[in-house]
Structures are given as C-alpha cells and as structure tokens.
Image (cartoon, rainbow, N blue to C red; front, side):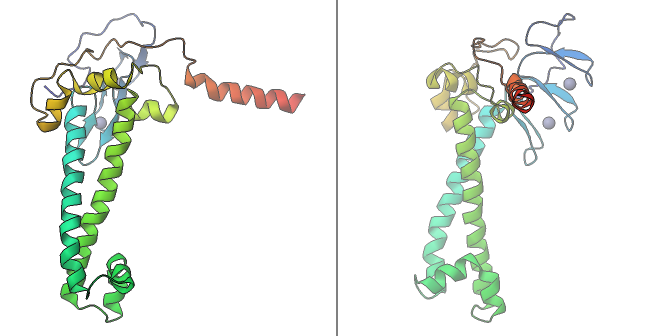
Length: 224
Ligand SMILES: [Zn+2]
Ligand SMILES: [Zn+2]
C-alpha cells in the first residue's frame, strides 16, 4: 500500500520525454522518480530518504510522513507548554536567571546553581522544546513544498513545473480526502496521479539549464 518503488511496475523499454535511465536499476525511470542508494531502488515521486522512518518518502507514503510530523510537533508543543509550569516552579519562578538556566542547564548544574534532579527535569524540558522546534520546522518545510507540489529534490534544484494551484497540490500529495487524512492517514484517499505521469507546465524553463546559463554569461563577461 505504501510501497513507492518502481520495482513492481512494468517500465517501458524506450526512453520517453522527461524520463531518465537509472544505471543502477538498469531501467528507465519516470519523471520525479529518483534512485535511493540506501533503499537500492528507484522511487516514484521521491522526496527524500528519512533516517527516522528507515525508508524513502515518496508518492504513496508522503501523507503518513506529513501526518506523523504534524502529530509529533503537536505532542512536543503540548509537552513543552506543560513542562514550563513545572520547570518555572523548580527554578524559583519566571526570571532572567530561570530562562538562562533553562537554556543552558548543564552550565548551571556544573556551577552548583542547580541540583541534579532539577538539572534532569530541565534537560527533559529542553528536549521537548528542541524536538518541537526541529519537527515543527520540518513540518512547515514540507507543507510549503506540498503547497507548491514540489519534492525536496525539486525544491533544492528550483524545479517548479508541477504547480497546479494550492488546493489541487494538496490533493496531488494527500489524495481526494485530504481533510480526513489529517485525522487518520489510514482512511481511503486515492491520489490523482499513478506516479508515472504528471500534469506539468512545460513552458517553464528547466532549472537544470539555469546554472549553465549563468556559467555561459560569466564566460561571455570574461571574454568581452
Ligand atoms: Zn534506480
Ligand atoms: Zn531510501
């Protein structure tokens, strides 16, 4: 259900426009599919390889990944807010001292200002805060990409030819029942694309040529 690899798909022998040949798989790969060294296969609409999930995020499991980030950041935020009440009490109320002690508890423990027990509490509270900032940032990054219908690879290379408007972009990433997906990603939500063909604005200049253009302009400037 969540397998986005191209291994179970019968791929054409002839290279179609916008397709590319993967030398590792020895097969033609459709647009937006890229090879992952860790998964050792090409994945449809590959976004990135997630170390925490231990697999590639692609066409069919992007919704699970996004909802995972959403609930994880919500949980970290909840933990951070409720930890704060307890931590301020432990640190003697809200003050500049307690704020700095919360940011660098290790230094305050070494200096003898905090006992070991409060140090552990503060460290755990910091862990929730850092977790919230990290996961929340990741969630916002992927929501921004989803609203432009871009994968991380396309974002990094400046490729934005699959933008169909923010609402349709959400449908392309999360399926037709995108609101239900946020409540439970297991609900049925068919994707419009099969992962092989995509609606693209081919009038947009291919970004891979942009560095070449810049290099060519630099050469021209140098010779003129
Ligand atoms: Zn491959
Ligand atoms: Zn991978």
